Image (tube, rainbow, N blue to C red; front, side):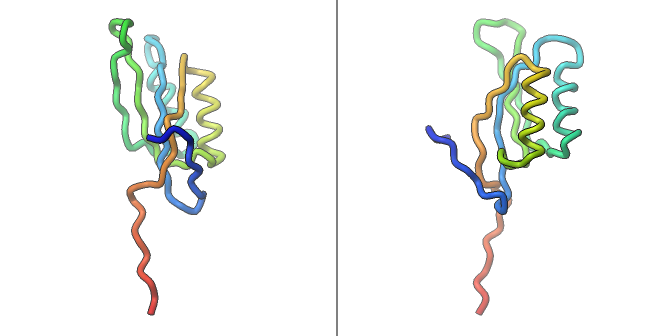
Length: 105
């Protein structure tokens, strides 16, 4: 985590982490996850956490394999903003999947 956002170059594999609150309607989480599917965005983590002061309500932490500056990710976040009660991007960072290149001799 950092105080200021870091731009990850499009050439570098990246992950984006965000939180969302879908509400308590039946199928609300499925509807939100289908947005990711429709934009071809792979989810690597989905974790629920209780919302303090709101019994039985949960916020979802999501990690996806996408760069925040990618068109698909931007569109997905716009759609999520329209169908969820709350979405906040926590950050975008280089993926752990990066393999170092070997210098050629």
